[in-house]
Amino acid sequence: MYSRYKKYFLLLLLNACLLLPQAVSQENPGHTHRATIHNGDTIPYIELPTIRFYAPRVFANRFEEARYLRLVRNVKRAYPYARLAGIKFEEYNEMLSKIDSDSERRRKAKEIEQQIKDEFEGELRKLTISQGHILIKLIDRQTQHTSYEVLKDFRGSFTAVFWQSFGRIFGYNLKTEYDPYGEDKLIEEIVQMIEHGAI
Image 1 (cartoon, helix red, strand yellow):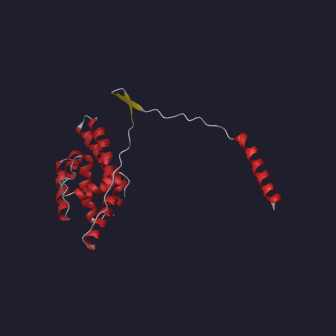
Image 2 (cartoon, rainbow, N blue to C red):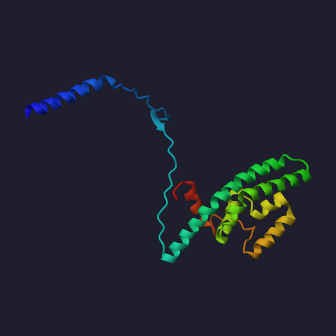
């Protein structure tokens, strides 16, 4: 029995001797940080990332919980389109501002409209009415302009009034403004959680 342990010990020792030369010491390069000197003391200054904590929601009943979860689902569905609308709005606004001629600007706006229709019409038709309402509000949040103002800027007053009237038939108001501290506080909270990866 003693010889058996002796063999294991020798094998272990042999492995250690064979593997030891392969181990290379690595130098620790250290970290460089900014520092401030206060009363002769050096105090390191390290910026930490912002971490947001969201308290778990407490619901009065199942109906309230289901309503909140439905709102989360609707915002998650509409937010990517609103975000893209904000990016496209800036891009197209910059493009159109470089054009001097009104007729050329109108032609380019129609071209942009057709491009947007071709790309998104099928997907946007699948949105529910609630998701459409949320999308209108989120477009205002992303562009700092109501959907009505965006239409008016790109297509003119007549088109904006037409779509506003048509939208009112189905319960949409293109002039709806986003109110992150009032009526749309819950939507803003959900958008913040989406942006920070919490949901």
